[in-house]
Image: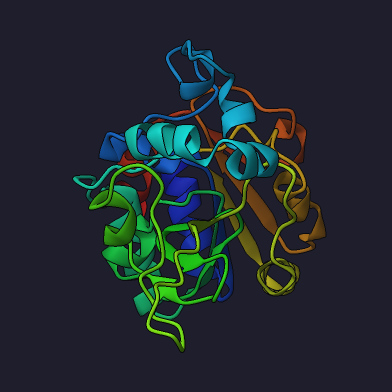
Length: 248
């Protein structure tokens, strides 16, 4: 264990209210690519920029092209939790970790066993009909082609046929108020805030860490972030390796 990991372990042992705030880097070790690295999604070439495709207006205007991209680049059915996910679930189970606040939409924290998960940007695991509101599992997207449509029957026996939409926060859409308020409440109460796998450049999500008033902020990220100055400890090692060593 490195000196930095030993320091983190000491702070974890001393803390009673830990909150984890994570981003795409938490899931890269599960073979889900991130967005902003050199090889990330936003540096690949498409007919439209990913920020445009993943916007509310594009979804409404070109749903078939939205889903072509969404199925290909946003859903990783074979992805499995990694050491970071399992370590956080274990820390929650022993009562120290009170919340995972994530910018990811892949559902891997829950798959690893975490229960107190605040998904700031929604999740691919839940979907709903934009017309009647019926909820659908991920398979409604993955096992369909083109635009997924609602199969609910109306009073006359005809299909609702509304477009099924992922419960993912698209560009031009606001974050869920209940999720944000819950996340802020936990950050305010925390005595240790562990931030991992995020460049802290996506707002308003990244701004939530400023509500922290506890003892220590630990930042685990391979590259420098604009918020490095806020951290009491910075670790540049892989997050799965770090959390696995400290918590596993």
